[in-house]
Amino acid sequence: MIIRFEKHNSKSEMQTNIPRVDISTLSAYRDDDILISRFAPYLAIHPNLTSPHRHSFYHLLFFSEGGGKHTIDFNHFSVKPYQIYFMVPGQVHSWDFEGNVDGYVVNFSSSFLQSFLLKSEYISSFTFFSGGSTESVIDLPEAVQQPIRLLFEKLVIESQQQNVLKNDMLRVLLIQIFITVQQSLSTDQRNSTPFQAHPVLKNFQKLIENNYLEIRLPGEYAQLLHITPNHLNAICKEHLGIQAGEIIRDRVVLEAKRLLVNLSLSISEIAYKLNFNDNSYFTKFFKKEVGMSPEVFRKKSLSKN
Image 1: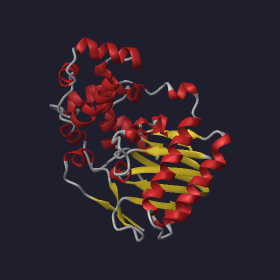
Image 2 (image 1 turned 90 degrees about the vertical axis):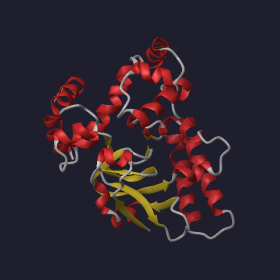
Image 3 (image 1 turned 180 degrees about the horizontal axis):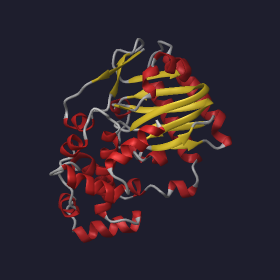
């Protein structure tokens, strides 16, 4: 199994210049669609993945032992046994482990499950695949710890076989993991996922993800959603407690933070990539939203990694 860093010239990759990891060569598969491994050997083969990077695929990480820190989009989490991470393509993360770390890792492409499911949006119905880092890190309740570990072990074993319909069995096991974890979450956690619960918010999130560099006004998004700006704001206030404009600004801020960890980019270059008219306007915007200048944020974020 080999993972490589690649440079991309697409719009999304041009924005960030953070190394993107692609599933490259998988000895047991003809297509670059899935990688399954116990985590200790995976980490030994790919020690470069401890520094900030992003994936082009979905990334599952289940810890059976270990400690240290895992950072996802600048939110820090303490690593502990029976903790599971669900990451969507594009999120930036890094590791700082302590002691022996083991568990399981699964990387799969966006198309791997879609080819198996009638509902193409099925995976986004799970709360931990919302793209929010706080929802994606779960400390498993004791009742499901061993069942989930057994499912991961079955994934490893099945991936090493050459059985008929092997990929379909892997898909079934993955979906079983997703459903088991989702069912184990508390009522409060299940009810804290407005993007999944409300179709307008879900579509709003998708539009922001695709257009936040060019479109910054809520009214323009409301037009794309075929609703009035007041209606969009009302939905955001009801389900999120914030206005539509803040959701848009939060996405711009997140990308700015991702760019700031790349020391090869100046503040002026970051402002240009984020489509700000000038460096001073970007600095003023960032300081208002984050409470510190881009330079101070860069220094603080680097000192934590």
